[in-house]
Each structure stands twice: as structure tokens, then as C-alpha cells.
Length: 456
Ligand code: CMX
Image (cartoon, rainbow, N blue to C red):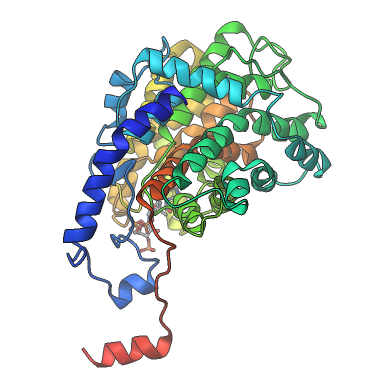
């Protein structure tokens, strides 16, 4: 038993009771309308999924169990730079409660023990070693995660007939914590393949937290060999670690309907184990319309800087943006399908740069990112097309990784994948607690839609 597991166990009866009450008394309550428009437009906005960890509101942005990012920064245990630890976010997502410092520390230690070199699945090491170094890092991540199904407690106990509906969640919980704990080594292995011919860039430390181990194994810590910067000094290393904690903390969940979360939930509903379920989610995260926008922004900022005399020339920036819009292209990093305010995740990352003025003032890409956040909304408002002229999360994240020497932009999404494991897998544990059934919406063909449209 673990601190987190004990706390989870304690809240299950009350939540299950509420769930069963809804199931018994309110099954016929209408929630939303489904139109031909929604069926043909990606089910946009249809309220048809059950998801508890987080919600996205057009004005407030993301909230985690009702808490905004600012509240999380204030309330969740974190480091001295003011960022909450991803471990405390994991606790909040799983239980809906803010952990104490002690509980967070305990969870950190537990993840470090579960995810140590000795416990990392040997078969996965072999599989990753056998892949071509230049294989897309997200393909490597998806393969690595799927291969971990070999050590799934849920899959093996299910096969042995040891499980029943009431205890499915326990092995799902065990697999979930193990999967999350294996991510630093898996990520480090993939990064070493694409940058260092597969030779290790750092060592796993059982006394460090999850984010520290991700940084060390990528060679992005001053205590390990750094492949990207020969002089990665102590303060840069500390700041990169803070960025990693910030990034992985705020990307942990974005309600249920996005492709990676929805896929994890759907595949999991077939009782596929957490490794297979999340591997499928990762394949969705790899899509250009989902997880890849951050790398587009990096390309955009670097290209713009190549064509303007300085990032401090608003007139030149405005002209550049108008040329872009007039040639029917979008401004990457701006706009959002549901948000109508600046993305609070962007605001948190902008604050990260403002708090470290001397670190960033000479990086013209970061300065351009900062200046754009006040110039681009004016231009987009004048352009008058998009519903949300404000920066989204991808406006800042990639260029900050780039600043610290992470130039392999295809790899940004792997770090996204580390973070996003927390929300969807937490939900999978709850799906099993509630005993949600296999998901099986009804599909309709053109004839049916034509008949329905003629009958109204
Ligand atoms: N630059 C220029 N035009 C934009 C724009 C932008 N950043 N964002 C939206 N528009 C345009 C749309 O292309 C659309 O034009 P058409 O009517 O000619 O097709 C019009 O404004 C209305 O679009 P919308 O309803 O405001 O936005 P959507 O919900 O259709 O799309 C998004 C949302 C994010 C795909 C879009 O804003 C976009 O392409 N942004 C740039 C790419 C980007 O930053 N992607 C990262 C998204 C991050 C996330 O989802 O978390």
C-alpha cells in the first residue's frame, strides 16, 4: 500500500455512492443536442464524455479539480522557484485533494523506487535498443510503452482469472504508477538515441524527483554530461529543471475530449491495460493537429527573426504578420478552439521568462515571443477572422526548450507525452473504479443522415 493508494481508497466509497446514485436516478436526463453538424464537425463541443480531473472553460482556461493554474501554483507543494511539483499535480488529479508536503515527498520517493534502473522492464530496453536511431521519437515512445505491457499486472492477473470488476482498479493503479515512473528512463533512452548514438547521457538517481531524473537522463543537468551545451552551468541547470517541472505540471491534463486523452480512455474501455491504452494516446499526440504545434512556433520565430532587423521593432513585426495573413497563412501559437482569453498555461510560461530577465534578455527568439504576445492580438483583432486572438500554450513552450539547448524539436512532444500521462491514466483508474463499460457510440451513414434531414 502507498500513501497515494491509501488516500485514494479512503475517498472511493463516497464517490462511488454519488456515481451510483446518478446512475440510478438520472440516466434519462438530457445533456446536449446532437445535430448533423456535430456529427460532421468532429463532435466539437458535444458534451458526451465523463471526465473528472480537469475542465477547460472559455474564460478561465484549464482548471484541475476546479483549481486554476494560479491556484495550483499557490496551493500545491512545489520547489523554491514557485512551481508545483508534477507529483503534487498527480496527487490532485487522482484524489481531487491537495497533498501535503509530506505526501508529495512520499510520492516522489515511491516513483523513484518504482522507476529505478533495476525495475525498468528489460524487454523494453531491448526493444528500444533495436530501433533505428533516426526513428521518429514519438514512434519510439509509443513502441516503448506498448512493449511494457509485458510487465502489466492488470494484463497478467486478468489472464490468470484473478480479477473481478471490483478490483480491476487496483492493478490499473499499480500499472499507472509504474508507467509514469518508467518515463524518465524511457525518455532518456530515446533522447540518447536521437542525439548520442544510444549512449547514456546521464544516470537515474533513486533519491531525485521525477522531473530531475528526466533532466538528468537527457543530459540536461550540470551533474551529468551535457550533449547540448558544453557549459551548462549550475544556474541554467536549475532553471531548466524548473522549466521541466512547470511544463510537465501544467500539461498534465486538458479535459477528456482531446485526441490523446480520448484515445487512452477509449482503448482502456476495452480493458486494454494502461500501457497499451496510453501508447495509443501517444500515437494521437504525435499528430500535427495535436501535439506538434510547439515545434511550428519555434520555426516561425526563428524565420521571422531572420527577416526583421530586431525583435524590438514592432512596426516590422506587424508588417511581417500582415504579410503572413495576407498570404492566407495562420499565426502559429495564436487562437484556440474553445478558449477566448490568453491561455493561462502561456501566461505561466511568460512569467517564467519575466522572472529570469537576465537569462532571456539576450535571446532574440524569446524576446520576440514576449513582444509578439502584445503585438499579434492587435493584428489578429484588426484582421477580424479568428475568435480568439490571444496566445495559446504552444506560443512559448518550444522556444524555452530551444533556449536551453534542446534543438531537436521533434522531441518536444515526447516531453509533452511524459506530462500528459498523468491526466488520462488517472481517469483510467477512475473508469475502473466506477466500472464504466466499453465505449460504443453508434455510427450513421449518409443515407441515414439524408433521411433524418428530410424528416425534420
Ligand atoms: N492566425 C490566422 N488566422 C487564424 C488564426 C491564427 N492564429 N486562428 C484562427 N484563424 C482563422 C481560422 O483559420 C479561421 O479562418 P477561416 O474562416 O478562413 O477558416 C477563422 O480564423 C476562425 O477560426 P476560429 O474559429 O477562431 O478557430 P478554430 O477553432 O477553427 O481553430 C486553431 C483553432 C487553434 C486551430 C486556430 O486558431 C489556429 O490555426 N491557430 C494557429 C495554430 C496553433 O497555434 N495551433 C495550436 C493550438 C493549441 C491547442 O489547441 O492547444
